[in-house]
Image (tube, rainbow, N blue to C red; front, side, top):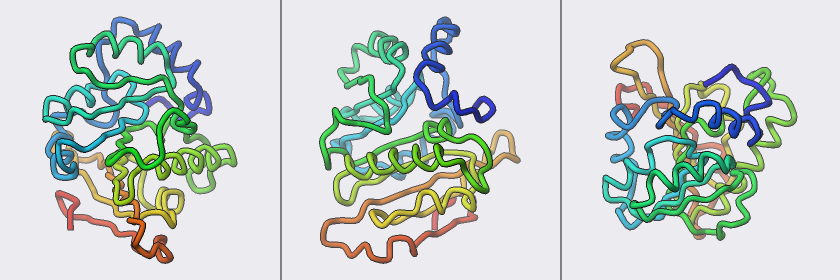
Amino acid sequence: MEKDSDELAFADYWNHRYVEKEGEDTYDWFRDWEQLGAWFKDHLSRPQANILHLGCGNSTLTADLHALGFTHLTSIDFSDVVIKSMETKYKDLNTVWKVMDVRQMDGLFDDSFDIAIDKATMDSMFHGSMWDPPDDVRENIERYLGEVVRVLVPGGTFLYITYRQPHFLKPLLARKDWNLSVETLPDRQRGVFEYFAYVMKKFDVEEDSEDASEPVTDSGSETGKE
């Protein structure tokens, strides 16, 4: 991803980028399906699950999930340029594409998705120091996570892939609404650069969420799974 900049949090920047790179067929931030497919298979529920791809861009992820048998897919992005392009490219998939800001998902009902997936979208909201993020970063993240919690069903899961390290992100991602765990995804092809998967499971209605900020776990194993 480009150097962190507050410009990345605005649709105009991405519309310009997609127009400028019109010949670019697809692009996947933070690993592609070949590298992440097995991990997603381990973390996705039944094929009938309603899945929300947050900030889809021109990633192949929606098509890859569809090929795996997950057909109840909604992909959103605040760039109308890329949504129009993806709707045309994947018109035969019969999935839903919407122009929508992840920080204000007014067009989506409460408790309507089993799985929400973010691969680099939240990263576009970061700029400045990760040790002490600026107020606008904190506000954007809070709005975003609040919307994710709202649209997830009780017991639903939010999957977030990033290179940003747990000691920076745990304080920002911890909420009373869900349980947070972290998995390490070693890059077998390049060997040195680690990615992390943040897995946030929304509490069921009957679950006590008073201690939701407590059960935050890390994994250092090769698969990142304990």
